[in-house]
Structure formats: C-alpha cells, structure tokens
Image (cartoon, rainbow, N blue to C red; front, top):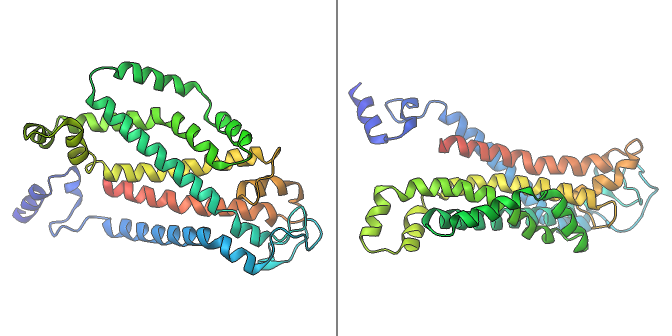
Length: 291
C-alpha cells in the first residue's frame, strides 16, 4: 500500500489509478500491442504506396490497352479497366500523389493553425477581428471550393492545399488557442518570462514542446481528413477531367463496368480504405496513451 501511494505521488497524473504498484499500466500491454500492429500496417501500406509507381511499369504498361474493356484475368486477377488497360499497374501508380498531397495539406494546415492559435492566445489587440474573419471562412463549403480549385488547375490535387488550409484554420486555431491559453498561465511559462525571454521566444521554447504530442495526433487526423477530401474532389472531378490513375478517379471511371469486372472499381476503393483505416487506428491508440 505504501509503495502504491508513493508511486501515485511520483506519477502525478490523472491516469495513475489505472496502474499497478509496479508501474505497469492495466491494459497497457494490449494498447501497445494494438498500436504496434497498426504501426506495422501503416508502415507497410505507406511503403507500398510510395514505391508503387516504380513497381507498376515492371508488372505491366498502365497506359496501353491490351484487352477488351472490363475483361477479367490479368495480373493478380484484377482484370482490365474501361479502356482495356491492366488494373494492377494503375493501382500501384495511383496512390503516391494522393498520399503526398494529403500529407502536405495536413502539415500546412496544422502549421498555420498552430501559429494562428498561439498568436491569438498571446495577443490582446486585434484578436477579435482576426477571429471574426476566421469564423466567416466557416460558411464557405470546403468541398465545393476545393473542387473548383481542382478543376481550374487542370486536375491538380496540390491546387486544393491553399483552400483546405484556409478553411480548416478556424477549427485548428481554436483548438490550439484553448490549449495555449492554459499553458500560458502555467508556472514554467511565467518563470521563463521573468527570466527575460520574449513572449514568442518563451512560447516556442516552453509551450510548443508541450503541445508536440497533441499536434502529432491532430496531424494524423488531418491526414485522414485530407485523404477523404482529396478522394471526394478527384472522384467528382473525374467526370470532366482525366487526371491519370488516382484511386478515386479509377473508382469513378470504372463504376459502369462493375458487373463485368468489379475489381476495376473495388481495388482502388479497398486501397483507400487500407490507407486510412490503419492510420485511424494508430492515431486512436496514440490518443488513448495520451489520455
């Protein structure tokens, strides 16, 4: 009993009651194991997605029609698309652009959201005006604005990054503003200010490191949201433009032949699921450990 009380005093956390006296968390092994499995799955999927465009040409020519439309068979039994092109090389080539654009969108949005939130938390003047304009941006439909930018830029996913960033900053900035305001009242921040550090220097040195894990968790969620946004935009934009072998575009273009070769549409759909679900589970596991 004495050891348990001493350990809980050393822990100093809200979750201390969930641990045994020896310091091993109840259910912690299961959570770590689940996080490890999800991490391995995420790593494998990311690796295949990144190196896929180099593996595709080895398997077959994704741009040449070598069979009838929606013919079955082919590499790994995935068959051929609406133009008679093999599905598997397209599948390997169609994920890296989506992944890079989603990660870039999430990173830029998180950086701007963190900077804006901490700026509002540390400033006394102009914050209400800034918050007003940020809230006004909330009335703009994100998907519609991103689709317009995507179409005007010639089906470029990277054209949606500024739109997605501008329209998600109101949400992310509020989150980091609330988190930053509580840290600005902490003793270690006040000590840094008394020691002579400027406001922004103290924020970067004392506040940002504390927010690192929440930022990483929110970054993972932002990547998932960006993948869904990019998928929706490229799926809808595939009606008017041909943007190569993006997975959502492959789904849209091959829906008409589902009865003949369902894998032409199901394979890229499953690829999107495999890219997002393990990452979502990993983010959830990290979030549980954070709490």
